[in-house]
Length: 140
Figure 1 (tube, rainbow, N blue to C red):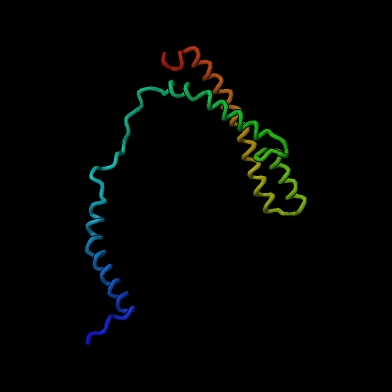
Figure 2: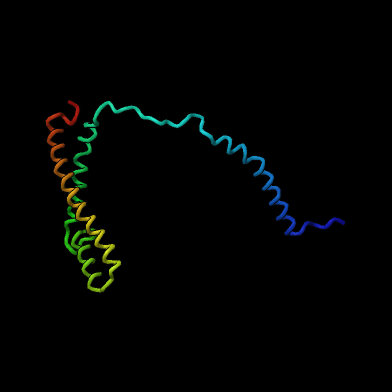
């Protein structure tokens, strides 16, 4: 009499069948994944300076700059402010955590520089807004 296959033999047979299916179909799947066109290596040169788009986005950019500068110039209780980070640097120094102090101090230096950069962008954006008003939002 034939005895039914044990669980171990069934699992081995299923694994063997799955391996056979993958071996047969895998090469054709990889062959189909190659691109039919060569990737584009160069782009066309821009024909405009994008003034219309810049003028359209200027109010939103101005609001974002205002929000960011407000946060950075906030007090000790404002998350993300220079003052709050300065307080953390001072606390690390008091507690003698030199590695943490160095890390936070580098972060503080970057954040202070960010304030200067954002203030400059804000001034530049005001000039752009004035230009946009005089040139029908970049369509002239």
